[in-house]
Every structure is written in structure tokens, then in C-alpha cells.
Image (tube, rainbow, N blue to C red; front, side):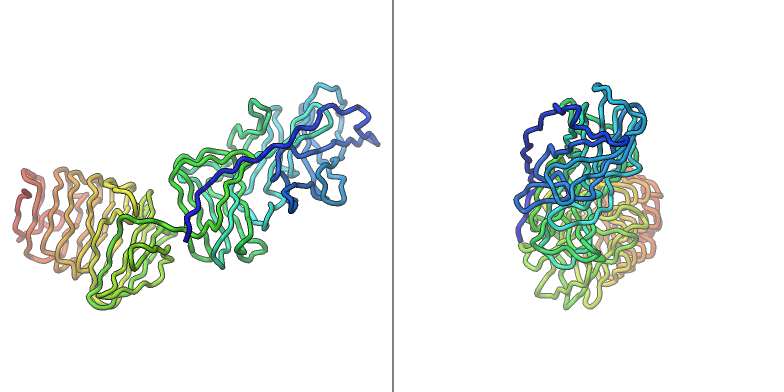
Amino acid sequence: MRAKSFILLALAAVAALSCSVREDDMIFTGGTVSFKATLADAPFTKTVLQSDGSVYWSPGDAINLFYGATGSARLDADNTEPAAQTSFTGTLEGFVPDGSSYFWAVYPYNEANSFDGSAVTLTLPAVQTAVAGTFADDLFVTMAHSQDYTLQFYNVCGGVKFSVAGEGIKYVTFKGNSDEILAGKVKVGLDEEGKPQVKEVVDGKKEIRVDAPGGGTFETGKWYYVVAFPDTLASGYTMSFYDEKLLAERIESKTVTIKRSVWGKLTEADDVAITATKWLTFTSEGTTTISLLNQGDNAPVLYYSTDHTNWTQWDYSELTFTSSAPLYLCGDNPGGFCPSVTKYSKFVGSGSKFSVSGDIMSLLSYDKDIKEIPCDYCFGHMFDRCKLLTKAPDLPATTLAPGCYFEMFHGCESLETAPVLPATRLYNWSYAYMFQGCSNLNYVKCLAEDIDTISTYYWLDAVKSSGTFVKASGMTGWSSGESGIPAGWTIENAE
């Protein structure tokens, strides 16, 4: 497996044609006018991409032309075969050319496109259909601005050029990790160089979906495109590959810039290799099978290995490990493993009893040392009713979030010792129902100094009737009972 980086490839611009066009180059026949159109960006300006990298106008192409204060018209291409230059012809109602007014033109034509005197309102679809080696007609938005009858079209968008390594991929999604606007309805004006630039978002979309051609699957060895508005993706991007379920996910956390008329190249984008430095180790007393149950549309990015060197992205189907062959698991979920109390994921096991060791935060990052939980309910329900679990992973976070361990080990009847809980401040529901129903649990070490009954609501309900509770030295705020320290337990101070 090979990790491919997101490289933005600069595209060379062709020399601009002369803007000097004679009056008799216009065609007036019964109110009809003709504009000569050329492509000012290369090589990926139009939908017809030639084998040598050049681009041609297609027969049947049409553009919006805006003129005067409120005038607009549809102009249609005159060419009958693909051509590098063509003329667009139509009728401009009630317009008398004066040589000083500007024309604004947009490809592709859309009846909904409009002009307010300084910017064109247009839409880039957030759901796109791929075409191998080129673009669908409605995707590649270009714009021209001219005082005469030659229109030089410049790309409005940029994006990603990608290929896939795996079979059966039906669609791909692409989004910025900081929820940047990538598609939708916007107003496009001109930058200081006279090139198209998004000036205002009217109805933005944060994720682009690209469907395989013809409702089928993407072919290996072919190039496809994600078309997006230019922007800086401050926290990188996430590109996901699906059939009916998630097959692979590529996450780049470094800042990435989508530039106008530039395509980042991702070869075999679904072929993801990682180098993990931390993971969870699942060890069975005999033979155990686990899967991941996702509630809502939660879909954490997880990788598994049998040698903690070669990693495969997990599709949540059953994995088996034995007493002599442990399973290793890590993840890449910087925003959290679970985002809400109703949208979560939990492990389901069958077979022999098993233990889990290692840092739970390795499910958020396989190569970073994290001590702060990033979202509410981050690990909620993770081992809920997992009766075979005998040992829990480490919970080293010192900065928590509301509900972060909500029902995390609820009903784990084989668990006797709780993981050390080092956080000194708790938030609402942080530990609520955390060990409820752990009928054999008899040891808890919790160093919290700032708590209330909401943060530990019924967290030790129905645990073993006798046990040891180690608390922070000097901490006097614990109540007695299922929402505090169980009655009948011995209380000790931490050293």
C-alpha cells in the first residue's frame, strides 16, 4: 500500500488573444449577434478533453450572456464538431452597442444564472456525476468579461483529480475538515487581475459527492474529478469511498489550498497506508469475534492489524482474535469517536472473554498523544453490555467533555477493575451510567476534585456490594451511593 500526498499542480496559461475585434466581426442578421469564444486557461477548461491535453468546445454548448443594466440572453455554439475556438450566437434584445459597456458570460448556460451589475450568481452542483478522463457538462464553470466581441473564458473552480485502486466503489465524498464551502450557489465577480473570484456565498454546500458514471462503479486506472470552489482548507480534507457502506477514507490534516484552475492529483486515492505508533490490543482467553455496531450514521475511521505494522481500514464486519493471535485497533477521528448521545458506535463481542489494553485515545489519533477529549459523548456506549470484557483500556484524558464516557462500560459484568480516571474536573454526564450494572466491579480510582451528582449520575449503580474506592487526597465532595461512592466500599486516599 502506498500513501499518496495531495499535490497541487500548477497549470500553464495560454497566451491571451487580442481583444481588438473589428465591428464587422459581429454578425447582425435580424437582431442576431455573434461572439468569438476562446479558452484562456489550459488544459482543463472544458468538458471535451483531448488525448494531447488540449480542450475543445463541444457542439451544443451554450452560455449565459449578460449585457447592459439588466439584459441577458442565451447564446449557442456554432461549431458542429469539437473545436478549440467557436462562435456563440444569439439575440440581444434592446441593446445598442456603444463600445464602453461590458459583457459578462458564463459557461455552462443555466436559466437560473443572474447578474447584479458586478457579479454573476451561479451554482456548482454538490452532487456530481463523474466522467472518466474529463468533466460532466454541468460541472466545469467558466466565466468571461469583455468590452468587445471576443470572450476569453477563465475557470471559476479547481479541485481534485483522482484514481482508485479498489473495485466496487460507487461514490466518493470530499469535504474540508473545517466545514469550508466547496459548492452551491455563490456570487462570482473579478479579482484584482480580472480573473473570476467567489465574492459571496448565497447557499453553500460543505460536502461534494461524486457518483460513478452511469450508476456503476469507478474503474481502476482511470482519472476522475472533484470540482470545487477555490478555498483554503485550514484543517485539511476528508475523502471517503463507498459502495453501500464506507470502504476507505483518506484524511489529510495539513492545510490544503484549492486554487482556481488547479487540480490536486491523488493516485489510487482509496489506497491508504498508515504508520501507527499507538493502538488498542484485544486479547482473548480463547477465541473471540468482535464487530462494530453503528447507531445513526456514525462511521468512525478505524484500522486493524495482526502485527501492528500492516494496517487495513475496518469496514466494521466481524474480526476474530485468539489467545495466541491478538488483534490491534487504532483510528483517525480527531473530531471524536461518537458525536452525540444518539449517534454512536459500540463494540459487540461473542465467544470467549477478552481484555483490551492500551490508550483509548488511539482511536482518535494513531500517531499523536492526546489528553483532551474533543467532543461531547465522545466514547459514549463504546462497550455497552459487553459481558465478555474483563479488562478496560486506559482512559488517560485529563480534560473531559460532557457525556464523554456516558454508559461506556454499562453492563460489563466481567469487569472487576475500572481504568484509572485522572481528570480532576468533571462535566455534566461525563461519567453518567459509566459502570452501571458492572456487577463484579470492586475497584475504582478516581482523582476528580470538581464534581456534582449530574456528572456521576448512577455511574456505580448495581456494582459489587463491597470494594475499594481511591479518591483524590483532600477531596470531600463525594456523596454516598450509586451516584457517588457505593455504600459498603472502603475509601482510600490516593498517594
